[in-house]
Length: 494
Image (tube, rainbow, N blue to C red; front, side, top):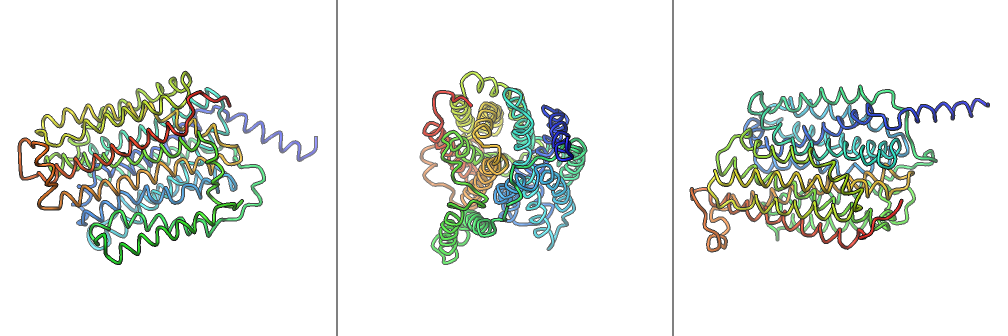
């Protein structure tokens, strides 16, 4: 054999040795966990962080949302770079960025430097997720096939969705017993362990990756669009919806959104390939993924409701989500079995319906605190079951619809939907809750419809929570409609 043939044979042998490799899989899962379990634990410990750092509620809400925003902005870019430059290379970069971001947040001082360092650290954490999410999913597609891939996706989803489920509980326990900073110090240890497990994995790239040219116009127009939209959602109430600043943000969002679409349409080097959406299954999985992830805002609202309105600690609030964490881990492989039996459509719809029911359990903020804690436990448990039913069928449907050459960028678009959905969901839910709870008169029309038991000095907070949770219920309804319109009833063959 020639030297080039020997090299190809050697690379093929090395790659074959990593097919179905659980060490690689668990290392990637730890990378995913550094985002969902640690970075997203701020949904529960935000009040503690805000008090300790001495910052305003709007700044803290922005710090919570900015991680998902940066993940959403860059996840497709990094997915495309992973296809061209190497999926292992980009995932390793993600581990490094996760460590840097966690250090900045964990060491952020109170005072004038609190907001800049907190925002920078949270942004870097989002960028780390943008590296790890699409590259790890692309590696799952490269190294696993058939039922083995569905198992790998299920375990990967336990790290992602399960980590999100454990985030509030873990964050509350750590914040109460050790201080919230130790959440981020622990994240560093997990990232180092993940790096050790994936070390030595052969590089994986798309064929013909040498002709890649970075899509700077597309990235810039997309970033401006998303930042303007985020600022609009979080600050419009404070600035006034008819103010020149708000009108300018609306115009910026629309103009740069149109420029982004023009820059990407027909661009072979575009970081978003709109042709992927010609596949209805991929479209349904991605759109519903965006909408269902926007429901994460209900965690911010319900956990702040019991802390601000009910006086619970972060640990006590986090314990309400224990059923969520247990259910999503226990049932996520049930979603895998449902996928294998019924195809993706039915379990995706069933998962959304159960998620909607869970929000219904969290909405009655008119109850006494003791009664609300009971229904909240039920609601969070159902939330975990619903997401567990949805996760594997949706992720596998998206992955199976992607060509191998675009598995990184396509996975990036799918995970961008997750991150942007979470960012906008948290931002909108937080904005509704903050605006209405700060209003002295509360939501007047609810007083004639719902009788609020117990304390009457926290009515504005309780009313604001009902309205904000209602927004999340609406998003679930739209997600169900999107699945029904795009994902076919009959399971499609590969």
